[in-house]
Image (cartoon, rainbow, N blue to C red; front, side, top):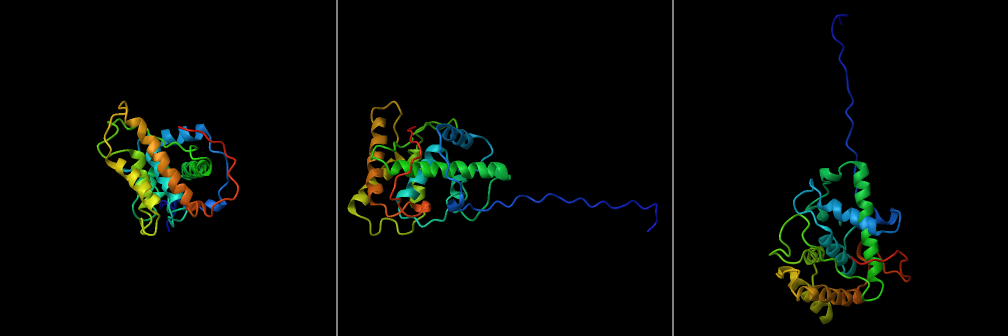
Length: 230
């Protein structure tokens, strides 16, 4: 090779991080605070998420369903529906770097554990979060209460549906599902009834649950994490 020929430069491109589904059994257990909740709520309303990403209310309904319904779902498989992924494991660009991905997973899992802790308390420990639509649209939307849509999406993870469930459980699911097309302004007197009806239905389903979904077997001792209502 002539000394006058330009030398070829080989530049190593940085490989994207390998973002694998988390194993809940190995993740650190830490308190889920009110600040964590607000951080997650705000994050989910930001630009850059795929179409169909859940807001906090829908996410809560979804996670509650996974906790109180016999859904055989792995700890990693619960994540893609949150950002609107219907098949496979594809992490959105919004959290495609290792740091935001790890933070997001920690917040979602923290929220899941906090909900489980409140479900394990008294029947009034968990009051469903009914938020106005934070993306600037009219709410309640014509499609119904967001929390309910999240809950129903969680139920869809179980192909058995209402099979072999008690009459009380069937009635509870029916009671929740009717608000999937509920249309009423938040100032309407009937709106105050929605959270109460959902709360009572959740209590029925919680009393019959045989496991904690992605968190595994029921605990004999209640969690000590702090509780708070929306």
